[in-house]
Amino acid sequence: MWRNFTHCGVLPEVDPLASPPAPRDAAGATAEPATAADPDMSAEAVRARIEAARIKAENELIDHIRSHSDAIGFPGELGVSRAVNGICLRVLTTRGNGAFDLIKDVSDFVVA
Image (cartoon, rainbow, N blue to C red; front, side):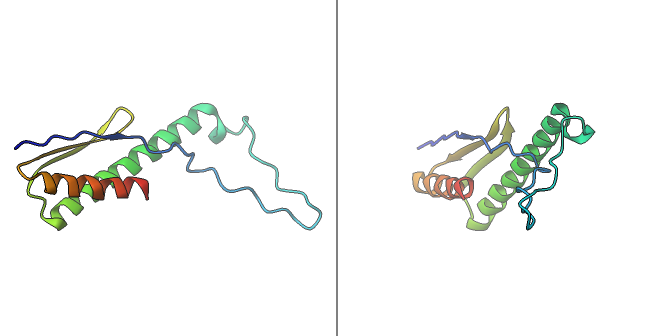
């Protein structure tokens, strides 16, 4: 029996330099936020940082999935790669339960 499952998951796009709101001082004022005139806050720079952070997160998730597959002794072939907007998981096995267990574990990684 051949099982093939493909799932593309999109990780959230978050600017890695964005920080939580600054705490208010006793008078209720906050620090001045960065403006669009700042070179590292331009739209292009923010997009580049977001893309770099997304690629890094996807690569870390791919490494985690591969190491988990090795750790559980997955009885089949596994392919994990980055896609246009997310990652692609390809599973080929003769045991449906093995494929289902791996897919369930991976979905827990993505949701967590």
